[in-house]
Length: 140
Image: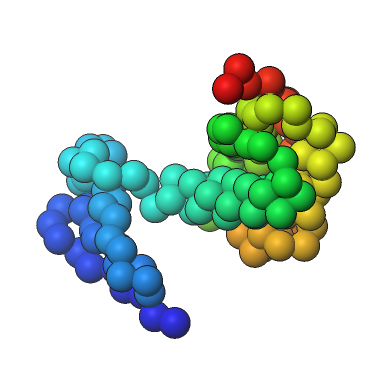
């Protein structure tokens, strides 16, 4: 697989994924950016959230859970000194659906964190990663 990142101007870059999609990355004004896109480290944490949610939804769908909505809120800290790696990441899943089984939601999150989510397992080598969740009943 191959991806690439191209510099546009100032501190603005276009990332092109192996699957053919593009995303704008930029920095804050104090570092020469124009705030035209997400920061590269924000992209990394969003990748973790996306990877985790993807796994959770795949597992819940396979276990025949009727999910209407799923999101994950990420709360994190970075080191004060360079390199400013992630040191703590907390993922809070909010899963909404009809008659959801909290045990199955917990299992899906655990399987993602411990077995399937490459981003979580990779970042977990550097940062302390924790998870929790809430299940909400949907009216539909």
